[in-house]
Image 1: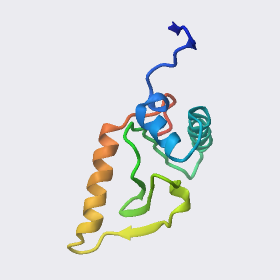
Image 2 (image 1 turned 180 degrees about the vertical axis):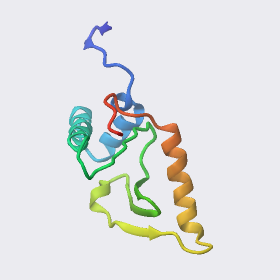
Image 3 (image 1 turned 90 degrees about the horizontal axis):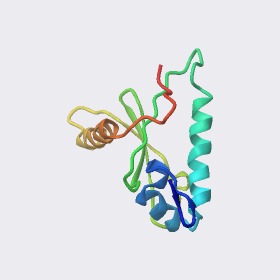
Length: 126
């Protein structure tokens, strides 16, 4: 579909309102921000089919607050601030503990986002 200003991109994770808000927060152009997302996905796709790597990726539309990476029962967490990128904040390792509510709460949030998110156009899971 075309508009007066040129082709209109399809509604997707890279054109969601949250992507535009996040690009503005870190003073990056929306085009550059989207290119960074595409590059990240391309690099992750290179791992697909690797003999020792099982990787699944999901995309979500919400504005990021937490960077959460899950490996089995271990979570690695960092925060996104309105004025800085997540990779510049400290990374915390959070493991499950008996009656540990913090790990359980983050794991619950992670699992909920995972269920609501969608796979990239190219499937990266085995």
